Length: 374
Image 1 (cartoon, helix red, strand yellow):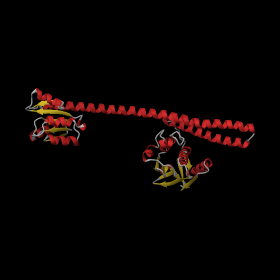
Image 2 (image 1 turned 45 degrees about the vertical axis):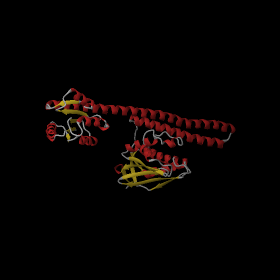
Image 3 (image 1 turned 45 degrees about the horizontal axis):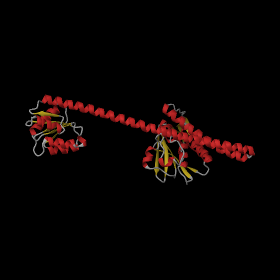
Image 4 (image 1 turned 135 degrees about the vertical axis):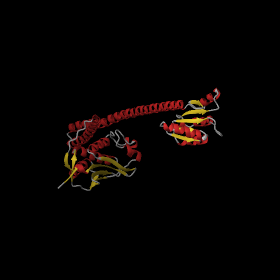
């Protein structure tokens, strides 16, 4: 938009009409004070500023405008009928003007200058956008590089932990066998098996991340009974966490069309996290129902919960809540993988959480992927 500033109404009207006929959007001000108010409220590509105005001349207006951060990219053309001497022209440039035109104005020359300023403005704007995009890309790559390094460090630590434990249990097994203590051998074997299962889970998550990144995460979809799947998951989870009660609320008489093992992976991830992040509690709820033409499956715990800013990022790849990262093991990719699985089933995944009170992670699957039992 162009701002015309002149204390003579006839000049404003005639120049405004000419510029609008050539497709320019034009605003006007009949004094320096009015011009300053408009510059503060609006953005202008160009200001055409009359020099001879009462109370506040064009030079003074330009000097004030040059101090506005909002208008630092705005070009100013001075128009003057009286001050045509070099010293006045020089003052116009030193006041922040990019051009100084004497009256009477050759409208064709003025139009050429305006078009040139617009072209320069567009080129500058596009260059600024490219520069901003490049800076954002550089910053993104630095964030990505830092996350990758952090992830490698975390993964190395998490993989070494169960390996070190297994190594220790093997040494204890050797001693137990040498002593002939069968009960001790069985105990160490059981504990070693738990660590191997942890290691297997970590490796499976790493492989899933790799498959997601390469677009090779495969799904074997067929109809399966959701209630039966959840009952089986509860039974298996209870065996490894006998002190925790998993209470199933609700039942749905439907078969889901999807990858049963992948859906199981999501529910197990929810339950595992619920138990892990709920120290001092012994109960989680597994909620299932049909709502709004969708299947709803949620796991509610009564643990540490999350802050709102953490909730926003919890499904990001490699994200780990800072204050829990040193207290709880994990790679920070389980929920990211879960979100990819549910997305590939046409569903939605989310969490409701209150800091200090607990969380409910849930997913929904559209009803058109379900088949009601007859």
